[in-house]
Length: 370
Image (cartoon, rainbow, N blue to C red; front, side, top):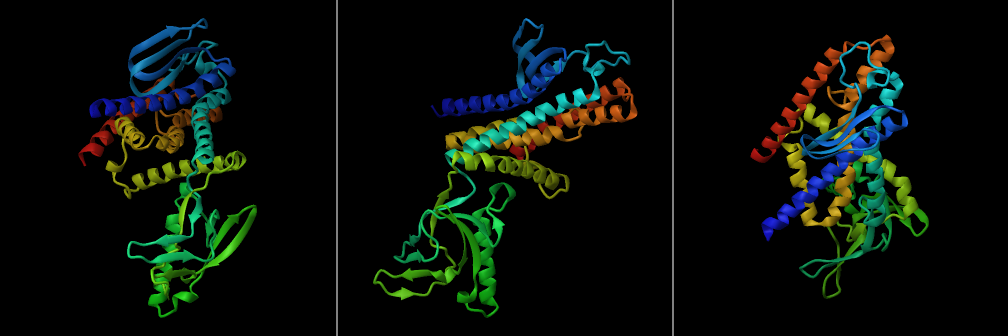
């Protein structure tokens, strides 16, 4: 039963990854159709075709065995000829081709926005809303918060906006204040004199509050009040669930933040601040999605926009075989008034594709070995 359950979640993970690829290629397909490009095949995955059919426009629709990517094949896209046929891809104006290349990235980003909207207005995520203002420890002490109130939504700490996507989580911001408070006391100051500001939404009002860790009073079981040196806020909280209109305004910034997480991770990887074993290819992605989904189905609500943002950022990179590289070559052609030799460009993209396949295989192996 455990094996079958695990297999089920792996199948679900593969389906999700294929769905993300499908949306990316669908972006290319829709843009191509709108701009009257001749499309020969729309495929999800590589390798042997598991399913294939040809529609009335002569376009082959395929599902292939390896869910490592996909493609939307336009007529004459890989043609080396310097005089392409009039309806081939390379005969189209550069600005049209750039739109088609960007369309896949745009589709992935819009997917990240849409699923961020769903996430924020169903379970929330990054902004805390206070549930209780008391906390009882196992040794019988009751901590009571005297400034913050139940249902307060904490938006910022010391002017820094609470924002998961940019790393400024509520936990991180409060931990930073606890560290500062500890240093304050070490320097010979009283904890009562250390304050920091939080911005909260209380009902329909936005309020700046000065907090002090001593605003938490501590009650023993016998009712005697004692001073607290625990640097606690004495609250429990849950993610704030946005209204639809609030989420509609927030989801764009949230999706950009997810893209920033991906860019930051790539930079850390390139500068050797992040070990290569911390990243993974499709196999790692599938197992990670399966594990997170098995732990809690709601994890999909954050995984899908994160994967979508990941695909958008990855594909816009100017690396051979990726959309960003195709855009770069097309811009060069537009500026020069003539393309780089097609056979040279095609060879560069082929080498880039081989390097990408080799890279994802290596990082998958390293991820599981190291």
